[in-house]
Length: 210
Ligand code: AMP
Image 1 (cartoon, rainbow, N blue to C red):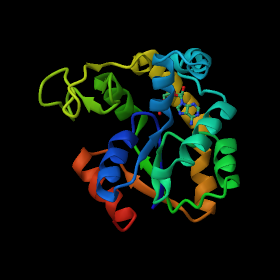
Image 2: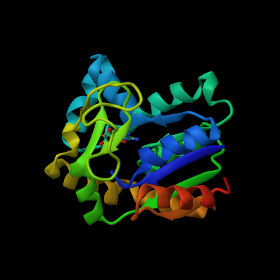
Image 3: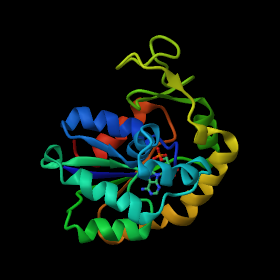
């Protein structure tokens, strides 16, 4: 199955993608995680992406399109994949269509801006593997330590309140139009992501018949 997770930053795309990934045995591809990795290892792409990311802005289309093209060509994507955080603009969606990739469903997680601001302030991510947690809603077994790889949990720089506001603005202007784009293609399924993780997971699985 080939899936896209759509929704505002902090809507819970990453969490749902991780759950679906295990359930369907297909990889999750997060452009955000790939860029953060590149940033950590100081590659040319990482250096180029740094200032955009830290200001809550989108990295230029050609950079992320290149990342996705390379990643989707790998063997583990043959039986399907979940895209988390891509596409985020109409040109990115068009590029994906032009790669000849037939997406089955686009899962749009609907969450209010108010809830998002509250969620982002408590979000923590694993420095080592990128898994995400929340201080109130999705605690790790040991505070500050990743359940999966024992890495250290940190707050992302771009999860600070001012950057979150900018990211929401960018989402409404540039990413939200993708809903109409995929609705026209008959691929959009809307899932209420306002409640707890279990509830959202139930609705997500039902929406794709899994
Ligand atoms: P995320 O972890 O998905 O919230 O992504 C974090 C940041 O990485 C975003 O705020 C952007 O700066 C950058 N980024 C991730 N995916 C994309 C994308 N598809 N297009 C442009 N920028 C992206």
